[in-house]
Image 1 (cartoon, one colour):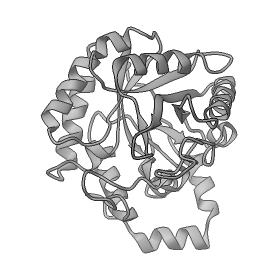
Image 2 (cartoon, rainbow, N blue to C red):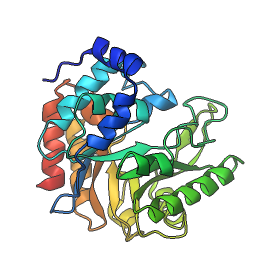
Image 3 (cartoon, rainbow, N blue to C red):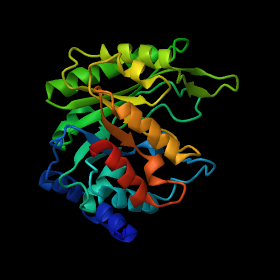
Image 4 (spheres, rainbow, N blue to C red):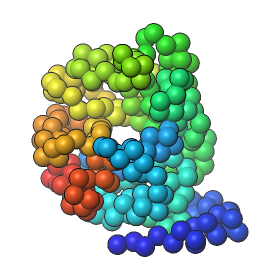
Length: 292
């Protein structure tokens, strides 16, 4: 298991911050594997203040613990890449963990969990220019569509512009759409019925001046075959919140991955914080589902 030197990371960031840019330049890039399927580890929740896993509200708070779990996951066969914000990716980069991996930068983290402005998913992390400059493979954008919230219109406009800009640079745009609203308690929630997900797919697919490099990131919901019938865009399944029954979660993935539109899985907490805390076994099971 990789041992994370917290003091070493802090010292490098303070004394030689240019080491980060140099490491990006030296990194060996990854590639889409021959089977055309992807398993991507996601670690961009903390930048929205979303640190909870199941009942543990601060499970992701310790950065070295998070990095250690990601390191274990990236060390397993069948893991193709990682999705995260600049702070996490730069730590992984300094640790030498991003060679030969696909790397996606998370872009719009402004809709902080629990905030009155949560649906204002403005771009506060990577932008297309920085993604291209660092040699990343693409950018991921959360696209929550709340029909009664005026923040939705500028979010859609910004995401459309990002899709266009990324494609013009030969980079993937990973779009994660949801129809959303506020529940009776006033908290933002995503609508996970099949028809809502289907509507979100059609809205997301139309963003930007081209869909040539657009990848969708979708939740696994009931009637998933009908949901995936809504698109011909390559689709990665969202790992989602860890549930009480890991076997049921994997069964849902297995059924959805049988659809030709589904090309893999993007999973974070469900693999990095499994109920039995055995990250390697959880990742291996997901890799077997994705790559066979």
